[in-house]
Image 1 (cartoon, helix red, strand yellow):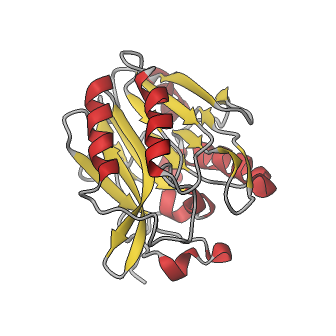
Image 2 (image 1 turned 90 degrees about the vertical axis):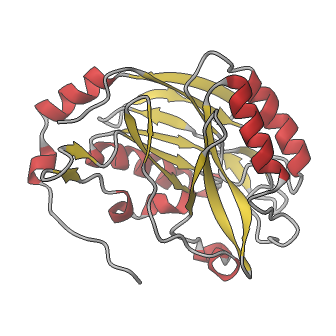
Amino acid sequence: MALPTQSLRVSLVQGDTRWHDAAANRAYYGEKIRALKGQTDLIVLPETFTSGFTNETLGNAEGMDGESLRWLAGVAAEVGAVITGSLVIRAEDRCANRLVWMRPDGSFETYDKRHLFRMANEHQRYVSGKDRLIVTLNGWRICPLICYDLRFPVWARNRYNRTVADRFDYDVLIYVANWPSARRYPWQTLLRARAMENLSYCIGVNRVGTDGNQLHYAGDSVALDFLGQPMAELGAVDLTVTVTLDPAALAAHRERFPAWMDADDFALTAD
């Protein structure tokens, strides 16, 4: 079974995103990121961290050649760590809620939010992603997803490839979010469920404060182990916490509790 062999340091940056002010957010989150230089391998920011979660897309969207992508590349190189979070990005006649996985060398991967939040009409202004992203860092396989994706466990299912790679899809599941405090109980509960059912570490990074739509966010960012037990809980304050993920503990749990051997095989189909 292919597994990571070295620990992974992950920093959860729970911040009060400035409403519709990309320059202010770059300055705000940039200060938090630079404070982590030499202390972490991966920095996780909230969903839509340059604007807040907005349906006013035209005035807040950037292109993939925009200032925020250049800024991400610059600060990732400066601190020597991968940085991830989502932004509002122009995608043809609409926009994408696009997660960017930015490496220190300037290379990057992207993931467009698959499940669009119909309750807030996100589906009317954004395009839905079609492909799940799996990235590697220091031998760890990581699946980063966005907010409402948390409510759809099939999309996050961690399958074991017995025939080709002899490995799980991923070792760490990450959700970046703008998840309002009115629905904080599902956020807390479903993150734990995703960790337990997928035999993986699970990290959720939410924002705090009140946005321009007067929605309040309680934070509740958390790092969970494979049993759904908290390694760090950030509460409702502006806070950054770094946790260290242990590959030996993960491997021992998967060996001791081999639920993956009894899992159902399935394939996702297109819409």
